[in-house]
Amino acid sequence: MALSCYQLPAYPASLPFELQEPSASMLPFLVTLFFLHSCFLQTNGHLREGMMLLKTEFALRLYQSVAACRNDTNFVISPTGVSLPLEILQFGAEGSTSQQLADALGYTIHDQRVKDFLHAVYATLSTFRQGGEMELACSLFVQMGTPLSPCFVEQVSWWANSSLEPVDLSEPNSTTIQASEGTSGQTAGEDPSEGPGGWPWEQVGAAFAQLVLVSTMSFQGTWRKRFSSTDTQILPFTCTHGLVLQVPMMHQMAEVNYGQFQDTAGHQVGLLELPYLARAMSLFLVLPRDKDIPLSHIEPHLTASTIHLWTTSLRRARMDVFLPRFRIQNQFNLKSILNSWGVTDLFDPLKANLKGISGQDGFYVSEAIHKAKIEVLEEGTKASGATALLLLKRSRIPIFKADRPFIYFLREPNTGFVFSIGRVSNPLD
Image 1 (cartoon, rainbow, N blue to C red):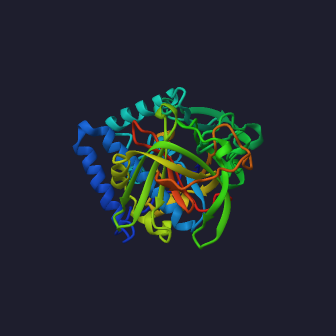
Image 2: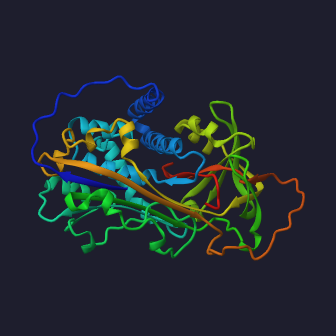
Image 3: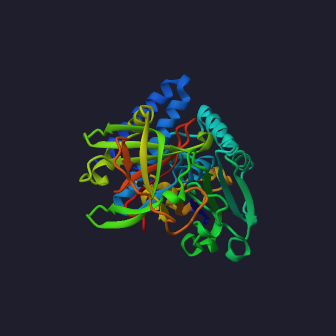
């Protein structure tokens, strides 16, 4: 996610803030958020559980906002890549701007317990050993000569491997500001140029920017039980509107964590966990059991408590697992999403209060751009075709076959944080 902050000449004080009734579409989320936040504050001994629910609710809210405007298409979004710069901005936000950021995240880093907990989590993410590598960071590129508050600089430099770098933002070619956001399923040695690379300066208006925030989140891991490329075969995948495609489908027979559940509307789903080595991360797949039920019927009913219940209720089972290869990368302008959540002051040059950044008025956020990527393949191979076909025989072993649209999310087991979430509607797109 890239945030471009501008500094303007001083303006007269804006009109008093006018309270508005929340829209009907916002009420369910506000009720859920109030419940989660209340539980979080009242259970001081359960900080981890409270933050897990709040972070998961943030991830699902992002997912549902994107899904609503991306009908039946693939997408991936990194909730951590979005929340990190919003947390950074909280160090400099004041007044209603700060409150809107806290409402959007569901928490505030000005709560010392939350601040200490998140700092400890971020500090340990890079300690994964053979199970995978996680990198999380936020770089603040500051226009040379821009005064910054020492307190802001100190807090940012301490937060999630963040850094401040003075650059000449009027000359975008004079520096390389890149982010490889999202995740790379289980491949190593990925070429950064293949990921979401340099930021589109024509969109963030760097010639007038004073401060640009670029957050990066990347993960590389190896399956705990690898798929063999020799077992990959071409099998049918039925898209939402009945279009049947022939796609490379990976296969393995393995002991997995699996469960069958109902969402709050009564839809039946299967949930499968595919862990990485040392359980550094797990990829979860949500598949409707009824082939005639589209994902759009299930997506609105996903909640943090539902995900928590499902993931903690899985049971070991020996199964035939079929999963298509897929690779998704996309870009979103989060400004409209954040505006719909009530984060409006941040983007308004007359209302934004980011005085804590430099002690001066005039900073506001022009654009919020998010890029993410995920790639799921057999370990160590990017072959475009199968080297052999797997001849299947009838078996009594249960089958999990992702041969229709499904939801996936990458989750860290110790905290329950969702680092990547998205939808596969067409593995060939």
